[in-house]
Image 1: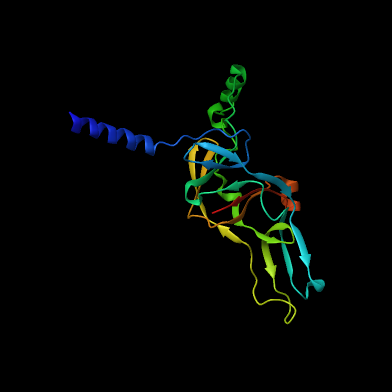
Image 2: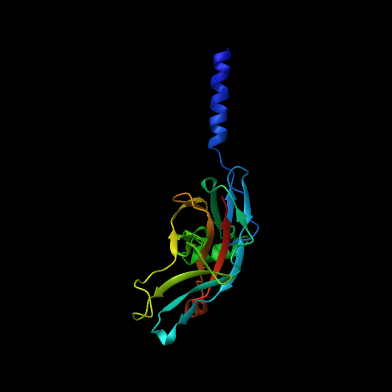
Length: 215
């Protein structure tokens, strides 16, 4: 009897450990940190920025372009790099409540069910990138490209800020978990979400979600 009870207890604990609750973030189209041990989400520091381009000595000394956030440290501090991931939601799928409209669409060869969740079928891996930001003069920066310029005024290599890999796991329609490929070292990080609007693509505007990771 004791052995049977022990088996059931072990099985229960294993099932409980394997289960993960995904809370719904308050705001859609934002990256949140997911604390797995508490099944709670943490809202990240958020700003909208346009791509900035700077040159040195008219380009002779090099050039750089990227995004800037004020402050050398994020106001959002996280710990335990091995036990965090991130979530992103576009909001709930739109449900039709108009039978007449549904009937009209069917008459025209359109299945209303195909429109539920329109615009949320694609995961965010194509529009969201995670960078380790660089700190300089009270600012956090993401360099898309830094060109060295002409010697002896510039450096030797073209470089950009370090991208941190993650995989995308679908939780349900319009809701994904961004699972880090490896543990992040302590530092300042920024998720860059590129604008999908026509004006945003012209100006290079993006939404930035920042956090700092402490030991």
